[in-house]
Image (tube, rainbow, N blue to C red; front, side, top):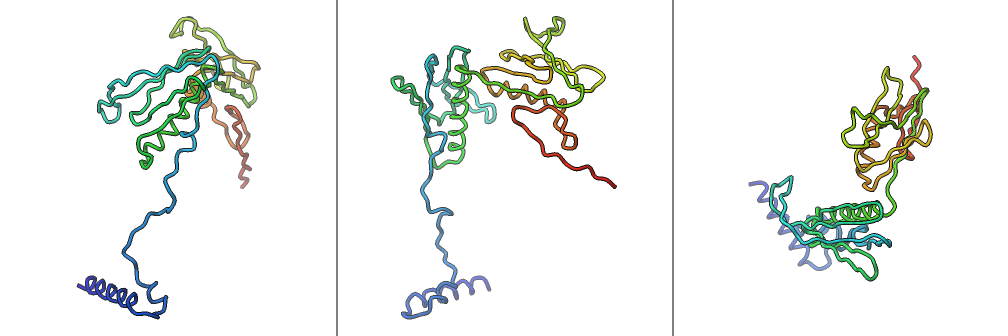
Length: 250
C-alpha cells in the first residue's frame, strides 16, 4: 500500500512540476523518470576485423562449397553450413563457416569479404571476427606457414629431434627428445602436419600450416617445464617473458 501511494504522489508531483510555469529545475530533476533509454546512444558498430577484406596472395585459391546440413556438436541441431577450402603451395585447409556468416569472393581483385545476418546480436558479431581471424590464418598458413620457437632456459636443458621406429604412430614420425632435469628424457611425438627441428641445442623450431596445431603442440611441450618466477628457468614460447620475484628471506 505504501509503495502504491508513494508512486501516485511522485506522479502528481511530476505532473504539477511540468504544468506549473516558472517552477525551479531542481524540483523536476528530483523526480525519477520512468522512460527507458539505451546504455549507449551510438549506433551499432561493425566488427573491426570482420569488415576488413582479406587479400588472397598469388598461388592461393579459395573453393566455396555449397551449404550442407550438419549436426551442431553443442545443440545437436541440423544446421546448413558452408565449407571453405583454402589451397596453397604448402597444403590445403578447410574451414566450416557458421550458418549466419556469408562470404563474398572477388576473384578479380583477389580478396574475400565476410558479413553476418544480424549485426545487433552479440554472438554473431563475436563469431564474425573469429571467423575472419581463422580464415586469415589459413590463407597465411598455406602460403607462408606458421612457426613457433621454444627456448629452453636452465642448466643442462637440451633438445633433439630423433626417430623412434618402435613408437611411431605414422610412417616417418619424429620425436622431440627433451632433457629437462628429470631422471629420464621426455619424448614427444610430432603430430602429423608439423615439422620439428633444433637449430640449437636449446631451441626447438616448429613449423606447420595450421597455427592452432602448431601452438597446441608448443603448449604441450611447455607444460613439462613452465617458466618459474624465481630463477627464470623453464620453456619459453616465442617472445614470452616472465617477471622475476625476490626470494622471501625470513
